[in-house]
Image 1 (cartoon, rainbow over the protein chains, first blue to last red):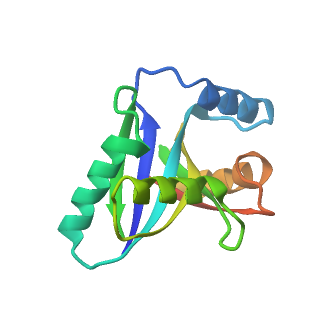
Image 2 (cartoon, rainbow over the protein chains, first blue to last red; image 1 turned 135 degrees about the vertical axis):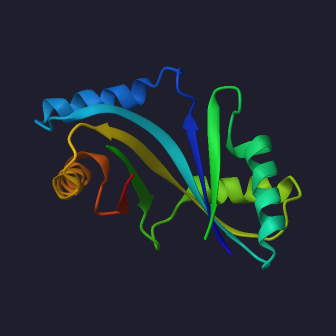
Amino acid sequence: MKARVFVILKSGVLDPQGAAIGTALAGMGFDGVESVRQGKVFEIEMSGTDRAAAQERLDTMCRRLLANTVIEDYSIELG
Amino acid sequence: MKARVFVILKSGVLDPQGAAIGTALAGMGFDGVESVRQGKVFEIEMSGTDRAAAQERLDTMCRRLLANTVIEDYSIELG
């Protein structure tokens, strides 16, 4: 089973990396970019076929390792 | 218009960061994790409503700045 986990800074938390990318895009002539926020994505290949169990395990992984829930939000997509 | 751009190492390109996360998860007792690959996600807020034009602009942004197409694949999701 393939899963994608997104971890991105909560809105309201300063994202200087995203801001720098936005500035760079504007400097390269790309108009109409209003904001850029950068985050991480994890592609996780898991054994087993129980989707509910996988979802729960991924949720625990996020809380314990993949995301810093003080400043980051995460979301899980099971493929 | 909101877009998500994913940039991830091509399969075949060594991903030591992903491998380290996989090893850490196994060490924490998470069984059944077969592989982990880490990539980047960009959440881009764009003005305008022309989806085709936005898609094309995002594609150019990826090739020129967001992705290193020698070693990375990218994909674009328009929200």
